[in-house]
Amino acid sequence: MITQRPMCDVAVIGAGPAGLTAASELAESGRDVVVLDEQGAPGGQIYKGVEKVVADRPQDIGLLGKEYVAGKALTRRFRQSGAQYHPGVSVWQITSDQEPELALGLLQNGSAQMLHPKHVILATGAMERPTPFKGWTLPGVMTVGAAQTLLKSSRLLPEDDVVLAGTGPLLYLYAAQLASFGIRPQAILDTRPSMSLRAARLGLSALTACPKTMLAGMKWLWNARVRVNMVRGVHSLKAQGEDHLSSVSYETRGRRHELSTSLLLTHDGVIPNTWLSMSAGIRHHFDSAQSCWVPDIHGAGSTSRDCISIIGDGARIGGAAVAALQGERVAYEVDAYLRTQHRAMVTTESRALRRQRQLRRFLDCAFPPTADFQLPADETIVCRCEEVSAGEIRQVAARGCMGPNQGKAFTRCGMGPCMGRKCALTVSQVMADARGVSVGEIGHYRIRSPIRPITVGQLADMALVSGED
Amino acid sequence: MFRLRTHSTDPVTFSFEGRRLTASRGDTIAAALLGSGVFIFRNSPVSSSPRAPFCMIGNCYECFVRVEAMGVVQACLTEITEGMKISKVSNLIDESETGIKESSKR
Image (cartoon, rainbow over all chains, first blue to last red; front, side, top):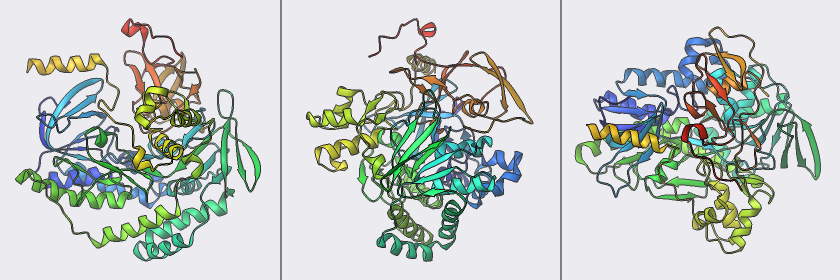
């Protein structure tokens, strides 16, 4: 572990395109950089297992697509940059601005430790937007991202009866990847609305700005439409089965249909993973264009706390290209902060970044979150851990519950081991809807450290170690 | 669910609920179990409903399993190792480890 050096210039949390680029930049310029990664190897979710695939299964690289290959150069540069890499490390705490010193609480192989960096870069990436519907806790129901992770890291392929449901670029990319591995899903139950005039207009400017990405995306969609049974206008999804998924039912054009399957993969786009940034007391707001909570960002990655920057999808969903560009830019801000102890801001934006923004505006408009998943039916479980339904949330809201935090006391919603990661957004939306206010007004769960489960024993052991120092 | 993995160039032997299974070195426990046809990882503490990995990136905590000598771990973030003895978890607190009985569930 990091016993020999509990201090460093910069701690980067997360090793996806944002974290790896920022760490490489800063380490190459001579800064002492430590990268803390919950995963076992660099690459984040998008380039998950890329080093292993290059070394052990080179034949798969082409099948996973061009977007995945980009991870090869990124991880190679990082490995040569001089940054220290610590895989399998969970960060369970960032000290608040009320405390005398910036410190991170780490957990690795069951032992806890503190690290004292001068600056922290959060590059914690995205997580999939919750997709609550009746039966979504049944074994056999997973996210598309989960299945893609299994494909990248372990080459696990679904059986041919697999059904995909929802919408978002990742769903169509995964379907295209399955096609290249010779698998044709039984169906794609597409919940996407038909394209609006505004989306079409934004699509045209995105096509001029990022033609390669747009064409790749159109190819994925084309593949899904031509090679797979794609059902449009799907709503009222239900997963059925005793101990395990046995069938999926859905409605389209006023009629209910049913498919037998043992695996249903859902997806509804991604949202920033803000658990660390919220627990650090950084200011956030509800971003209505992306329908999710995002930290307030100025410049490349400056936040309301001078010693903490946020980049990549954890700052706002922008995709891998934006994450890498922000990683480059934030290095200047962090370097200036380390020299002057004052926050600096990079305000100029490269053409590449402006082009990516045009692409994102189109994607946000063309693949909006699915209405059914945003405001699920009463009987749908919202909090998977404590098994609290949307109906219970509506009931407490109707009785006068002020918001998600008070709701915890009445329902235990959001108080299980996932600490609200899989229900926070849904609960805020359902409560805001029930009370007739905006999601921004109703607020978000208050996130407190430890943001990862840690035992009292692990904490006590850490105190003993540092007491002996 | 997932295609069963029939062969591996670098196999690891482990057990789940006493069943001997094999996986590939470097797999996470979650991938090892799903690739061996294990569908149910645990039962929920609230209603005992069956659960299995959902997000695979460490956020949903649905993939909790108990590993001998390690305790309760997230199967999607923990690498499988030779001889690992894995079992289902129904109560997150292990009475034998803590000596505390969990209070009654609602």
